[in-house]
Length: 135
Image (cartoon, rainbow, N blue to C red):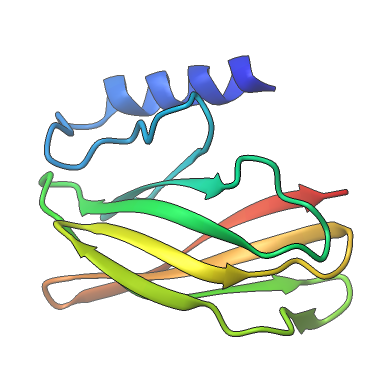
């Protein structure tokens, strides 16, 4: 799995514009890259292993396709098969230059979770999503 994530990060890094100001590698060889035609987003959990019912944080770098920092407007997570979300509201901490820490994430049940991340740059706001399996 780690090799697949590393290969994905390398593919994104080589197919996207230079990302020196908005790195997709958040260290430790863990995490995910999510991208659209407008934005690039890299994230990794802290601690690295997400446990059911245990709080965790997400570290994120958010930028636009011109390699400029973008704004993380909101984040949420839902379980589509169960039609509900998290029992807690996460807290966004803006660290500057498109870097964020989201605290208070808790996946209270095992299964498929869908992260929804609202990202803004200029006049453009869009929702990026990422599915995760938690066991």
